[in-house]
Length: 145
Image (cartoon, rainbow, N blue to C red; front, top):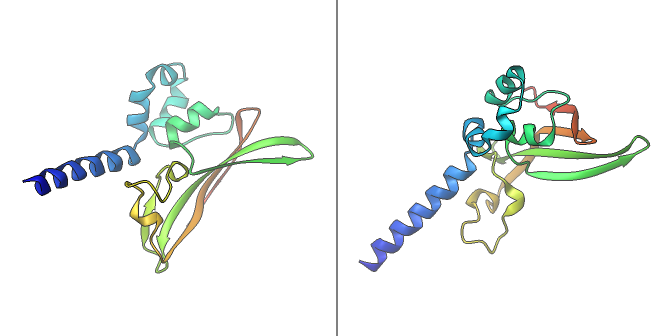
């Protein structure tokens, strides 16, 4: 009895983690309707499709794409910019393990640490990069294959 209750609880917790990780633009819009309602109809259409455009602010990008997997700052002669990176995790055979999880919030001591992040033969690569200057998108890089 205790074992089945534990398994049910563990399954429910795992399902909640998976659902949170599979957030869609629609679910992010529902979580932040005030931010979405202040946008133009054209901007709303982009976000509903999970797309972004030059000039979008960080809140708009989060609505469309979710939280980035990695964030870094770049400083060059033009000043500082912030780069958001979205990562794909694959097996060495090229099979997709996962894309779109908010990896930077997890660590190996977490009991719900996604198995694919500790997968011994995995590789990660950036599939989408957004660069912000003064809080606005100034460049978008995306895989084409």
